[in-house]
Length: 188
Image 1 (cartoon, rainbow, N blue to C red):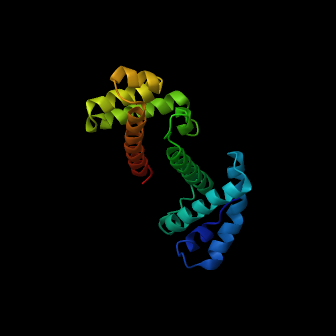
Image 2 (tube, rainbow, N blue to C red; image 1 turned 180 degrees about the vertical axis):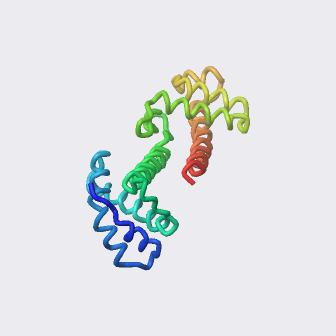
Image 3 (cartoon, rainbow, N blue to C red; image 1 turned 120 degrees about the horizontal axis):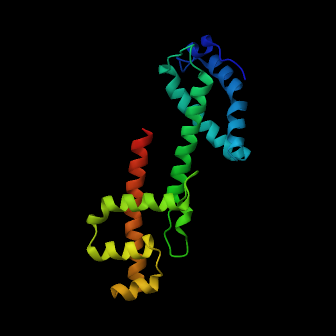
């Protein structure tokens, strides 16, 4: 573990301070790659995460007030992990199931099991369900939340199987939008 000189952090308050930024990047790139590898990232994926972290640092460090009684290293690790979690959530939202053969488990977040994922979907659905006709609410609940077969749901509500898939797609699109809005609100 190394100590970040306060003078370097002070010089980083000026984004145009190229020499200080080069030194900072030289000091912290190996550490950020190490943290990425601990999370299971291969070098190429880790490079994307490390680059994202440096972009955030470039924006945040000019306003950063260094407190010598606190650990810069701990602050950096927190920033790194927050970026990692945000990328994981965004990636998982892109993989929400769109067709029947994709299991609900595809949307699991890092550290979130299938039941927690289902709970989140149920909670968000409760917030938006009144925006849909009663039939859509019932079909979505039965097919997605209760995981009943599409054929059974179609018979139960006297609709075609294509209608069941269409309702699922329409409601999931809205859920995806609501979840992205929620995540954007949390990460900002």
